[in-house]
Amino acid sequence: VVSRAFTALNRFTDMALPLLKSNGTVLAMKGELKPDELTTITSRKDIEAETSEYCLPFEQHRRCMVTIKQLA
Image (cartoon, rainbow, N blue to C red; front, side):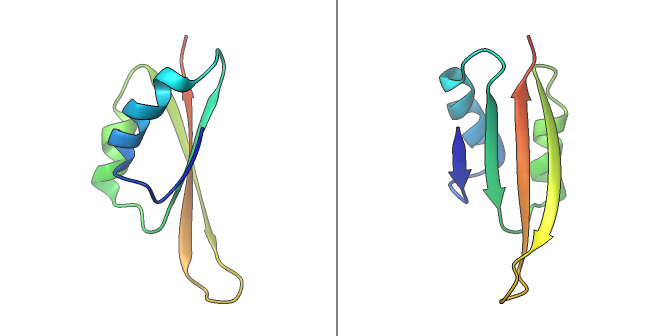
C-alpha cells in the first residue's frame, strides 16, 4: 500500500493495514513528519516502522518516507 501525503499517519495506517497481504508493506510519503505523529505509530505493538529522510533535488524540500510492516 502506497500513500503520498494523504492523511495523518496513524489514520492512514489503520486504513491500510487491513489491505495488506501477509508480510506486506505500507509506504507513506510525508512532507514534514511531526515527532508526535511518529510516536503514535512506533508505540504500537502490532507494527514495525522505519523512517528515511531525504531532500528533493531541485527544490531542496525535505521529505520523509515511512515504511510500516505488520507483525505476525
